[in-house]
Amino acid sequence: MDDALLYQLLLGELNLNQSEPGVAYSLYLDAARKTDDALLYHRAVDIALQSRAGDAALQAATAWKAAQPSSQEANRYLLQILIGLNRVRETMEPLKSALAALPPEQRLQSLASIPRNYLRASDHKLAATVVEQALDVELADPAMAGAAWAVVARMRLNAGDNAGADDAANKVQQLGRPTEGMALLALELMEQKRPLGEALLQKYLQARPDPDMQLAYARLLMQAQRYAEAATQVQAVIAQRPEGTPAWLIQGSLQMQSQQYAAAQKSLQQYLDLVQAKSVGVPAEEPSRASAQAYLYLTDIAIRNKDYAAASKWLGSIENSQDMVGVQTRRASILAHQGQLNEARKLIQDLPGRDPDELRAKLLSEAQLLRDAKEYRLAYDLLRQASTGEAPDTDVMYEQAMLAEKLGDLSEMERLLRAVMAAKPDYQHAYNALGYSLAERSLRLPEAKQLIQKALEYAPGDPFISDSLGWVEFRLGNKAEAARILETAYQSHPDAEIAAHLGEVLWSMGQKARAIEFWKEGVKLNPESETLEETLKRLHVQW
Image 1 (cartoon, rainbow, N blue to C red):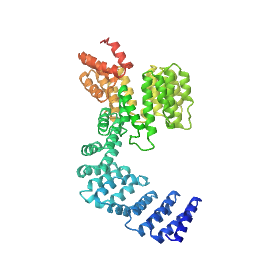
Image 2: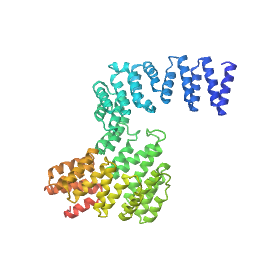
Image 3: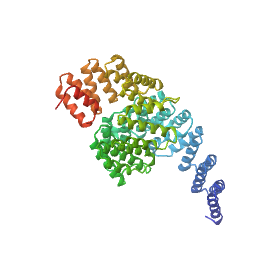
Image 4: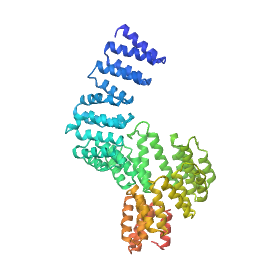
């Protein structure tokens, strides 16, 4: 570096510090062209990107690539800038060059990141076409074809071409050896409930039981309410990496779902211990948010155990302001359990309501508080006042319908649920709630069965909807089928209400010892279950 170049670079930095990025950029790009120095080209591109000057960044990256054609870094910058500027057609050659410069194993790994890079493009259909054309070499190579078709499938999925994505996914299944791209495709297919997703993921996991993919799979299983299968995946991850994964938090969540509160407390405490030891492998911005969820779960357990001092202690440990509604809701619940319902409601009402989402969260939280306190009329009136707007809020209407049932107003419950179905035809809870309510009262049983089957179309395998189907089969006199459905639902998700129904079916079939076994398990799961308590009382069951 001679004196003139040193002076030029110092002048560039001074202009940058004085908020003159355009001048700094020009000085650096000129210096880069004079010296053919990659670091100076890199600096010129960075200055342009930081000042959001996309065209200038493209000019610098193009100059860098022209000066150093073999530079992978220059090519990578050029590709990313073109995508960011939505000049998708021009990305084909940089993408081909970037892949061609990599050895085979690195190229396989690089393929998996392509769809994520193109998410920023506004025209996803064009992006899918360009990428597929750019991968002509990889698609023709037997060693690369499976991974390349996985990229094509993901690009088509992003473009809304579901049929094309399914076609490419079939090629992945036939040609592909297990790669990260196959796993990512499988997860994306599962998220959109497309065929082949789960089969592809199983193929990948059997060959490469990657803990991160197993946890992603577990989360999707939880969304589908396949809790037992999710628990199996999480347990496998814990066995493999007991000291360094967020699997303990997911396991605690699953145990909360299954009402295994003592086990959940142990899992959640283990997770927090690992966080404090800085051993949990989550991104740097995540620990406080994830820890807040663990503290909220522990608060719920403490409230359930009537240990309000412990509940307050857990809430005091939460530092993430994004969880303020959850924190205040639990504080309100503590007050309500201690007989201070008015004070509890005020806590919720005093929460900020700066936008419609915050106002809605406050409303539903206060209604849930009143419902837990069995103040059904107050909760119903609160939701009714809030549902007078023009756009129907299906969640609010559904909660209002459930409160109408508690108040014995079955015609109003049905009116609201049918309004929910009309506003959101795939809202499975509305079909299930109406079908179960009819079955519980032995009314219009064929219609009740149709409603519940409709709910299962939208949520296949949901154990609670399956419970409703088993119950309506029992009411129709199909006891053996009812027992089969209910036992499958209970195995999928042990729950006190499912245990109550299964026990009653078995009791009516003369299998009284088995019925009592399930009822005993149900009492352990939830000693306060109203359904189970009413069943035992009505059948005069004692043990």
